[in-house]
Length: 96
Image (cartoon, rainbow, N blue to C red):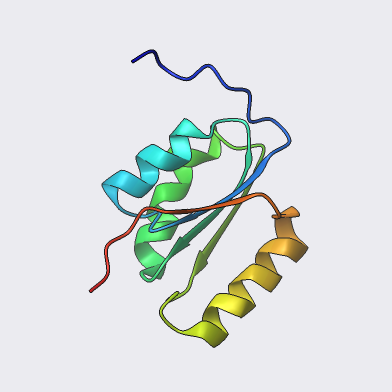
């Protein structure tokens, strides 16, 4: 399979589980997009920022447990306001 040569500039993507290995790889795959990084672990998602900041046009990171419907709704609202996120939600996490 050939590597994707897609242009994600101007797209908006929320990557859930962004602090893990898979989440970081997914975020890097959307280079050029406006990215919202979501993780349950605030320290881990902050630690991912330096690596991912060069990949994104706009980068927002938040600590949210998407298993909590109220927290998930607040995350969507914050992402909309901060980075005009209204594109794709990419779940790159496992359920615990």
